[in-house]
Image 1 (cartoon, rainbow, N blue to C red):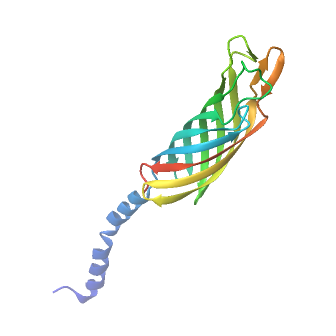
Image 2 (cartoon, rainbow, N blue to C red):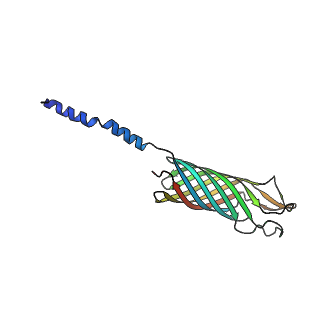
Image 3 (cartoon, helix red, strand yellow):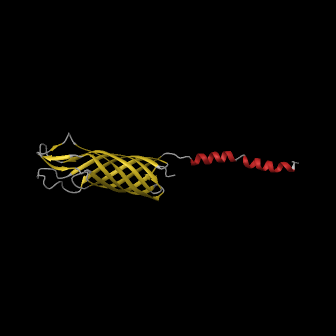
Length: 201
């Protein structure tokens, strides 16, 4: 028969034995981990081409805690004809291809990002009809993005954003010796799209 004075110690010992294993499991389950995200957005841009442009921007991202880093490939097409003072043989439509890198901070449903864009404007001009500064209409911008995202299903999120950019290199289109268009010093991009978390947690 056990000593009655030892019974409280035996109970305390039996309760404490599973505790380390439980604590280890809880700590392991709560450890932060990197997750991937795929997204696709429709974007509308101003100041990057002779007219406003619209297009698509697929992206891949890695997210850890409240930070994320992403790479995007944007393709934009002008919504209207190029400047009206360009001769009829001149450009009638422009397109833009951009590679975009961003680093973001997330807080609940809101995010803020630093954004860097590098790409080139393609303007359909017959050979010899125009001159450009450099070998092509290269475009480099740096700016900020702000937006919000809402989870509408376990594997699906809706997000919208607005970007403001400073155009570091401003491509210029010349017909003969006359400048017909030069990109704005500032630009804006608005977008809305869907995000697909690989591991939504």
